Image (tube, rainbow, N blue to C red; front, side):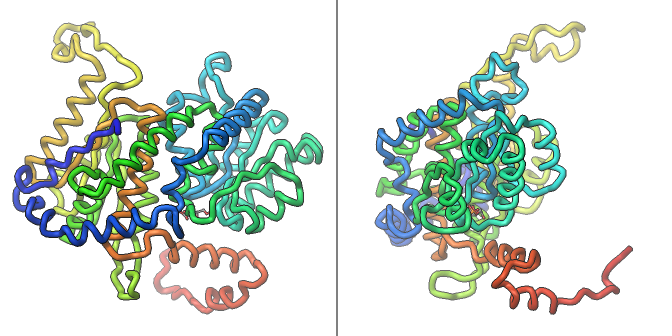
Length: 464
Ligand code: PA5
């Protein structure tokens, strides 16, 4: 494992009364073994097929790379249509591993098509996309685990229709490939009928745990991401997260520390990477943490209404926006810093034009500055008695990103096991999806529409 996890500042020795005592960790050994067993002993079973993603055979990686190279050769733009777990993985990996201004790079410097991950149905966004892509040379990966999600299906219908008009029926089919559950759902049926290339999602891999399945691997292959190294990283982290001793298992330990803090009233989990390339990694974390742990009942049916609200923050930018609150506001947060030892570029700070402006910075690098700022914020929070821990990446590359993603998945699974909840369902999201079907008039949802219509609004509470 290349990543390092430093949880000193979660402990009472660093932050005093708000910290966790070593005895609290050792006294919970039966909880650790129960959480460990629930996750590790169920590896590959039920909704835990995601643990097997890093075991993908070499032959499949080679096939994905060959497919990706073919699309890359002919595409000017590549568009991913998906939402939630079918979009956030691709978004955070592209953010981390492609040039930060990939789409703006001159064509010669860009080794892959322009990339757009369309995870909303804002009509202005669709119209804007259509203004800038050339359908004749644009390829679309429609990703939906259920094959039924209104947002993704509507995007697909709009774009397939336009493609047929622009390049003709036969060619349009070559511009679309789908990633979905084989044999199930509306998208699968259409894909079969139309003859689109289909990539399967294993039935036991849920949306937010799917980044290392075809949901992520297909778009990564198209964009030339080194999926071999990413899988190697994920495999190394899988091994680390399956260590039995909590003191050497990063996901089990940090899941426990988070849950323990949550139970002591720290209901907010701030994810604060110090790298622009990891900015959307915080979005990935926010989804997996929120949707997995925010549950009304536990596995025994007892009402628990548990969860820890994730918040995203970017170092150093948000030091000038949110850190005041983190340092002096309520003791209701755990801050996770993500630091990078070696950034992908080194930028020197030369002597200032006017000798007395910022002279103290002269001879340093932006690399030193961002690292000093991370450590200083960590120091300030710790001094103020605030729970925080740091994940260090030696550098941001396919391998370390694979490790980080796998760690988040294990950490979430262990946290859910400590809480005794079903980590892998999302009844709250499903309810909204059904209500949308009803409002849009889908057959079979008439009762839901009636329920919706029965809710009346009191005009007295509407200010115009
Ligand atoms: O994690 C989840 O299960 C959800 O966020 C889904 O990914 C999201 O609702 C999209 O669902 P689907 O991939 O079925 O279109």
